[in-house]
Length: 184
Image 1 (cartoon, one colour):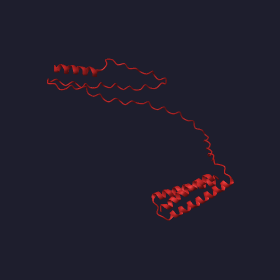
Image 2: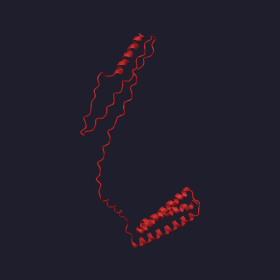
Image 3: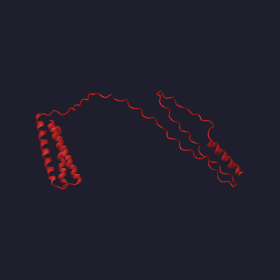
Image 4: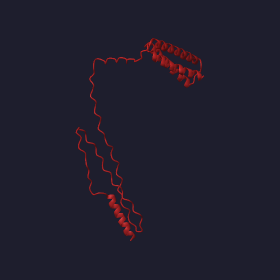
């Protein structure tokens, strides 16, 4: 009785692992652009049958097919070459500098911006001069570089007659220079 149940179980497992007798493969419509057909990969081998539990009678073990070699990698089509651009004998004209948009200041506001920018630049330059004779760590050297960058940009803004921008950059340089002096 026990062997009969085992045999039925083994047959049921074999039928379950065998799957359907026919396979229906549905393929998509071919693409409208002529491209090389993709390489097909071989179908995966069916999973191996489960190993039955040991029985008292000696039966030869079921034959397991050798593992299938891994599928070959799918090759992708080579990229299309780009069409060559015809060389022009004339170089492209240089792009004009973008226009600076700055608010229109009244005479009083303009004088205030000039004074603030000048005083902030003076303060920042004095504080940087204090650092020149000292041994600076990496953070302090970084601060000095940033301060000098803001001062350079502030001077450029003054040359461009952009006093609002110059005032903002000079204020940044002054604030960083105060932090530099505090770090000594």
